[in-house]
Length: 307
Image (tube, rainbow, N blue to C red; front, side, top):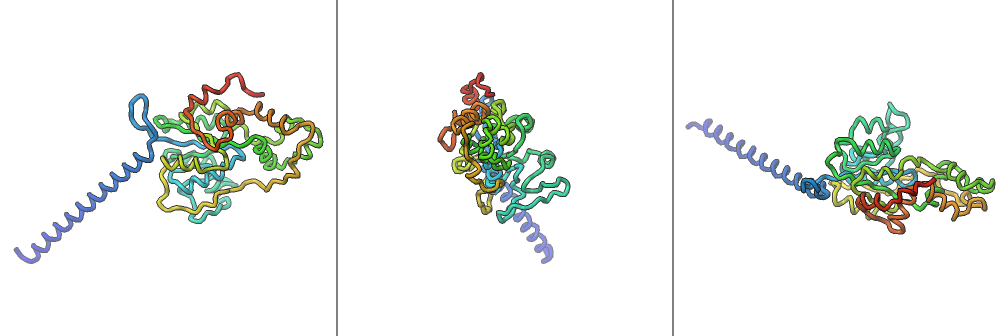
């Protein structure tokens, strides 16, 4: 056997060993990835089959409950976040909010995604979805066929009713002190200040399997819960926490009058919106609670529909 033949055989053997090594490493990576997804992307047992089922989180972004901040914090912490206020894939290395960049939809961009963009991109790559849309549209989203065989967990932020309304007044530029001086009723004040109350009513609970309620500005317990299921980023991104969309509040614009006292307004808010009753009944003074949807729905008084 000549030198050339021996060299060729050695080369072939070397290539075979190399390809075997690559194949084994590829298989090892695939196994590790499968184990990772199995351990992090599963929630519990399917009662009908006994098998594990994946879990998808749906953040109900209610106006003036730090929803933009939650969306941004989560998108910078995990993979698979799809939100109106940002996706995982589009986050900057630096925690900076970009101005509008979408040439087709004025006023929108990667940090405020137009709903048409969200629809065209689809939700099949999402583990955590954050949206600020009315109940019928949110319900249709959760009921998409792609989510048929997953555990659907709804995440609802809770904020003390009076503080929440004052934030809404500030957002709309309404001076409560002036309204009160004009003897405005509580109903008139709520009508002037309320922002997008169509994003929640108790019917929304029916599309979830589990419900998480948390204090709107305390994310620690929520993030600890998501850490158990949602895949963390390999490279940690800076997180400045608060993404403010309101101007600073002025307490001189938040004085109550005789026609609508603090206690009367709070009672009116509790009657008017089932969201406030939900948080008051199930979260109370706590910062976090997670419940099966059946338990929440069962304890809601069907005769207490508000005004």
